[in-house]
Every structure is written in structure tokens, then in C-alpha cells.
Image (tube, helix red, strand yellow):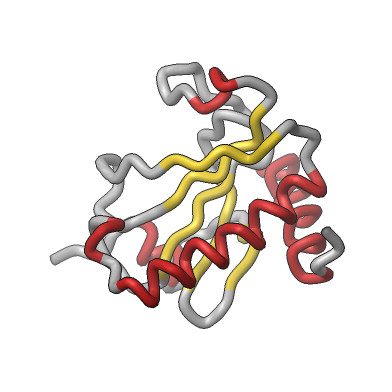
Amino acid sequence: MMASIFTKIVNGEIPCFKVAEDDRFMAFLDINPLAEGHTLVIPKEEIDYIFDIPDDLLARLFTFSKTVALAIEKEISCKRIGIAVIGLEVPHAHIHLVPLQTIYDIDFKKPKLKFSAEELRKIADRISKAYQEKTF
């Protein structure tokens, strides 16, 4: 079986705009975002379906996601951070964290935003700093 694109990101084979990482999880910006700060959170272990993740790891994934979401919320002006798990695009479980102004901001049919690599790096750096400092 070929490694998923997310496993290649975890292994450093494909670059990403990393926001947060620990021993089991990684969070990085979606490069085709619905909103500024749209972040993907993944387990480093390649597990295709979120409901195949063992309970203890799933609980830790959501706790990690919560901390990342709070860091995003501190740095990106929004009313809330929405979460979505679709699970069809990439065979590697992942959670979308999307800064929201309205319910329609998490509509995946919407045209994706375009940011330059430099803009994405700056956004990732701001969120990463808030995550590391836990200033929320």
C-alpha cells in the first residue's frame, strides 16, 4: 500500500505549513482553505477512517485538536472554530478546523481561498506561536 499524502507530510517527504506537533499528532494549514487559518489535524499513524482509531488515541486526537483550535481562535478573527470530518478525500483520518463567521463558511462546495506560500507561512507561524505559548 502506498503511503498517503499525509504520511508523506509526517515523514518530511512533502512540505507543509506546520502549526503544531507532538509525538502522536500533527496540525498543518490546508493549502486549499475555506477560511484563513483552516487547519488539518491528523494522527501520525496512518489510519484511514476516524472511527477505526482506538478510543484512547481518538480522545487524545480531539484534545490535541482543541488546543490547536484555541490557538487558531486567538490569532484568526472568527466567531468560532468549526470542525468537520469527511474522510473521503485522503485515506488518512483528519479533522478540519475552520474559523467561522457564519455556518456557510464550512461549505466544502465554496471556492477555496488562495494564499501565497509567504502568506501561509505567516499564518502558520502566528498560530504555532500561540499554540506553543498556550496564551489563550
